[in-house]
Image 1 (cartoon, helix red, strand yellow):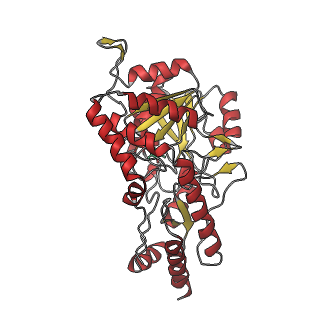
Image 2 (tube, helix red, strand yellow):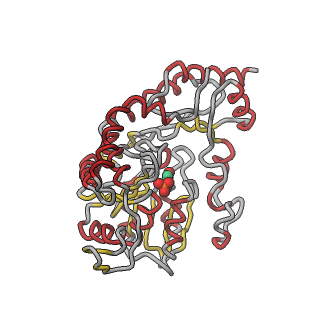
Image 3 (cartoon, protein in one colour):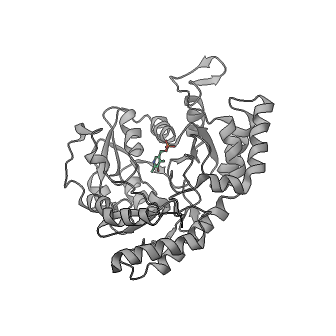
Length: 367
Ligand SMILES: *Cc1c(COP(=O)(O)O)cnc(C)c1O
């Protein structure tokens, strides 16, 4: 049996007529830049995320960077985030001129270790970016307490957590601003790049609206130095269709995870744990696997494709020599990076594919 890691075309097949007609509407309508579909999707996404404002941008990376810039974060400032995240979180801080300061994660949830966060705060610290990694919310209450105590801006990186809830409330509404990505493989993905900033602060929303559009408050009036970072109208039309299915798709992911959990008891791999405060949306289903490379090769031979998120932690990448970190700086992240495997996970995954994956894992460890 073939079990792809993710199958984006399978999802398209389930909603093809609606998607096709939404795209054609844009092409025929001519509103290619900031067309009405962008505004419609912004309103729908704000409502879905239980926040006041949503501003469409060109990708999740821009959503993070513009959020930081909206609070004038830049040279001389420090921005704390986790070593165990996609590198774009740290790039967002460094592109503003600020210094990303990394902290290690909790070994069970893979999200920010709040004690280490507090210890990393210096007089230069201006912001913190908790990441809801793999679709599981970070422990926001203690993070917000520490941030308030030290007067820090909180930007949630919700790029992997569309629809996830922390203590019953959607992620995105906890920070001063929050970033989402609509990269195709995300839980809510378009057919190219896309992103969104959400916030409850009307002034921040206005600043980001202006910054993403070449600094214009109205056409040809450039109030600040801006960017061309707009959410594309075609992508907004696609996302408007897909948003209606997001809860259903996230529910499917949770069912798949429950089946994996059940089938992988005593299989040789350790299954992910969900914190009591979290409603996980399983952007990724991460297991800890002894002899990971051999397991992956074995699964591949059986037609089961896996991933690693992420094989090389940020602080060991060549991109950040100036930060001065080294092997051993973040032991929890480094150990995870050497043991984690992401199993096939997408809404359209069939139960038989999950059974086949679990059976192959058991076979590997029993041999
Ligand atoms: C995908 C992702 C980003 C970046 O989003 P893009 O749309 O690819 O720019 C940032 N942070 C995390 C945690 C992500 O998963």
